[in-house]
Image (cartoon, rainbow, N blue to C red; front, side):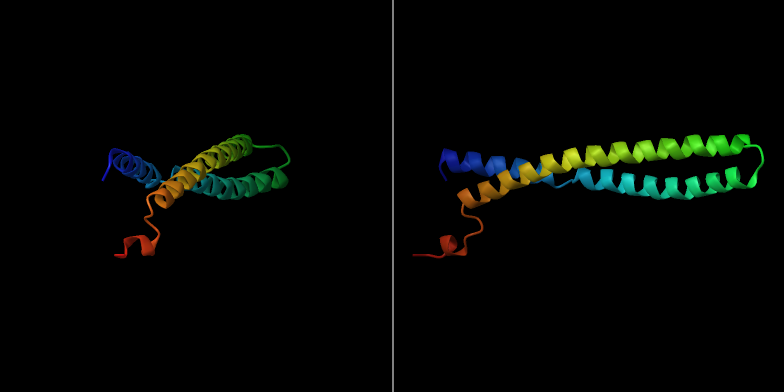
Length: 112
């Protein structure tokens, strides 16, 4: 193996290591769970507001928690999109390295 090929292999290994943990999946999962919990809490808070003549303190607390969860879900979703875009760019560069090294070309491995 020459120095250029060795350098490409090292770069490929670094990219594979970086892509082995997908941060975007965790961010999207946090966003989804927060959204579901916010919907449930929002429904309970709405019921408290609907049933009482004066809004109890618990309803205001529930409203604040619901808005906090929605804000958290939105921030995780937006960060997840940003991280996913970066992961896709790194994935494309990894696939380009694989093509340049002929790792996915079975005819390159056959004796001639």
